[in-house]
Image (cartoon, rainbow, N blue to C red; front, side, top):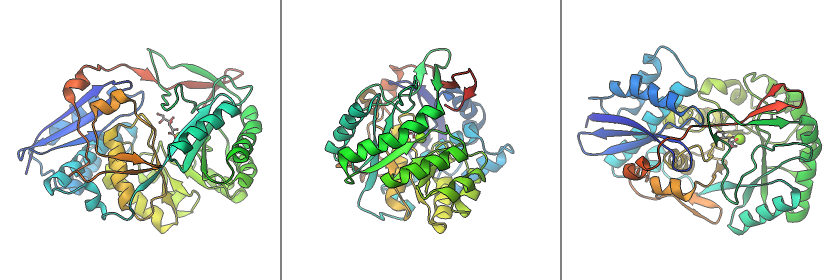
Length: 403
Ligand code: GCO
Ligand code: MG
């Protein structure tokens, strides 16, 4: 079997997605997701100008050799654009390989290590009572694990707070990013009260997660971790930026709160120290941003040796193609922890019909050969690309902060 064609397309059924399709002379095709929120066209052009033309005539079953060819062959290593491009090709090749062998993809990743994949949903609101209503809604849908986000009083914009009941979309269409203001002092005062309020209302029946979205320093994160310990969060996510991996030593020394990190990581080198020194508990790297399944498997195996579990990033800005790749991966690997599952809109699901199914707080990837996802290209063409940016955050004196 040989690759005869590889193409990339960008569409916006509610939000933007970058999709790769690889075709073979055997009539089998594979799909990959190259979406990089707010930077979609950079990856699309990296693919169409520099990567896709290299694939024609190659053996699509040689997933590892092709990965190394694209990674080492570029000379310029790593980075979000390169790794999203390689990730999309890799996911498409695994889809193709599983279709060629007529098995659901998880069978090639070790087979099922569990019956189903535990996912967490997103409850968010502008005040605590509405937050509890959102938590109850997710609980009633069967979720056992729920992320709680609430705008702190005194903060103009809270990140992670959805605009509708079930859908969360941080990027806004337009030629420039939205501007938001942030106050760490107000947030630190509020976050422990938010946990206490939700625990009072729901007791210990739910796993509660929370995302600090890179807004704190390691010292502030340590302070927060200590105050959240009595409420036993499932995890505290992205408490501080992690370019300085050593910074997490300080957080770790001061709190036992479980730490999750890595949704913006694009290679194993972003987390080598975090994993080998056991500075985190959950690694959030995701296949479409981190070199595909071939590379993510290596990260997961290194994590396993160090008692760290996975918790892949699964926001709306990852298409159903990469979501399916995660569900197969989650079902198969031993050190799976939890999977983020933000719901896509109906418009997105119509463009990417899929076999994975949510039931009572768990997802199963389905038993269709390959990933179990299709791409309706005619429908996709009816949703032309709409540029959108993630917001930029400022402190109240005008200093740029981490969004
Ligand atoms: C999460 C994330 C996302 C990001 C988004 C940026 O935990 O799901 O923090 O909501 O903000 O993926 O593109
Ligand atoms: Mg996050």
